[in-house]
Length: 119
Image 1: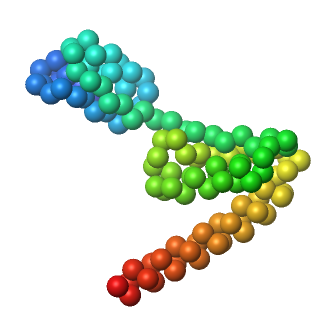
Image 2: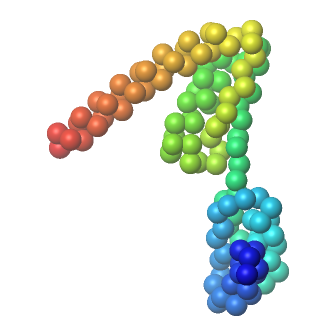
């Protein structure tokens, strides 16, 4: 019995009010539809690979801030960028600043870890 077949039966038979699904979009949309049809609330966390496009006329500071969001939750948050596409005209500048900020972030994390060990 396949995963979607099992899911259909569980949705139909379980006395739950909510159906939570983590996984691929195609299956998730089917599970969401089935849940809705049976009067259950679908809560779907579907696969996503958000990208950040940094163009040559961008707000560089804002783009850097958005790119650093990728470090939140080790990219396990569906709305943070997992890939960055950078226009070649600003690539070197962006990467240089990104690396500097990344090093600063690493040092801050080390400091916080030391403080927590001291407690």
